[in-house]
Image (cartoon, rainbow, N blue to C red; front, side, top):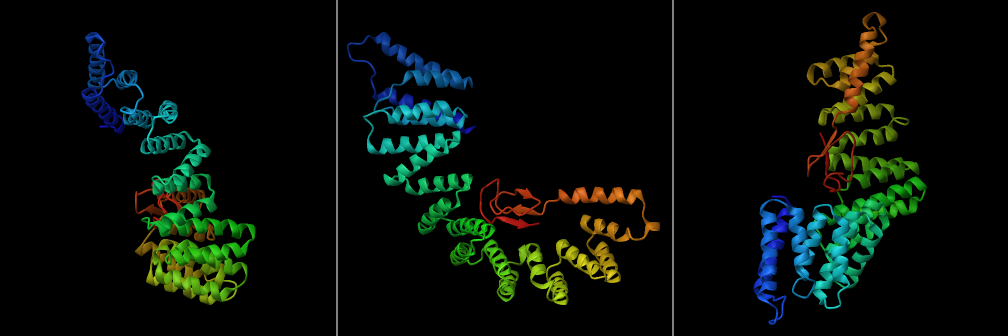
Length: 382
């Protein structure tokens, strides 16, 4: 059963219960009026049973008036509109509730929370933010308010505000709070690095690693920071720690390793790739090693290594490299091989490289915030 249909059934049950304790007519009212009230309720149930949700909603909405006994029912109706995508109607219902002077504290807080959710779904982020801030000031559902604000700021890419909310949730011992807070700090550091503010970047990254010692992204950004200041020794230490603690992200370490070693210690970079391939064989490391052999004029070594790869663990990347390498021998290749190379390259570009461990979302590049389930640092290499 869809969630909106479940809510509609719940509303019908609430109205039925209300009939047993609320009398919409004074004693002097005629029995005909009461009968019409009961008939309307029965008609609404018939619409519901006939799967005619639109008429059922209209009937139940017309049936009940806003008073202290029907607040919860109106909130449920508003939620039903929102779940069906009729956000404008949900906003009107919840705004109408908030305009009532007879709401108690609990009912007002409930209406504020639901109206904020309406605004959020409608994309009215500034209005939603204002209401969530009001919830925090009223000290009602504070944890929920901070969660919603955090998601709102992430959507807006307002990373300082997002980090402030994430800090509060981290201090509240929110599950995954350390991961979310550290990733928000990484976003701040990334922007700071791009703008040349190394001081802010360093401060943010130190805090990110203090909160989440296993944060790979913070380590990679710290390497970038050290390389910008030509502190090769410090960058090398961070790289070695990342390899030791998080080898599953090894393919992300190849470019930092190339920047650390290549222009200073070419042989060391080659040994690094060879050692890592022996310890953690992967296509990405193999390709980096092949490219290194060719760039340094070690074509025979590249051909032998490529032959081993194609025999032991063939891949699209290896075949594409083989075609490029053999292109230096015109008698062995022709236009067909060029077309095949382009074909293999196009397939390679579409290949899934990372998968979210939480929801299974596939991507050809690393996504620190999963676009599907919105969990941080949940993408793992395939």
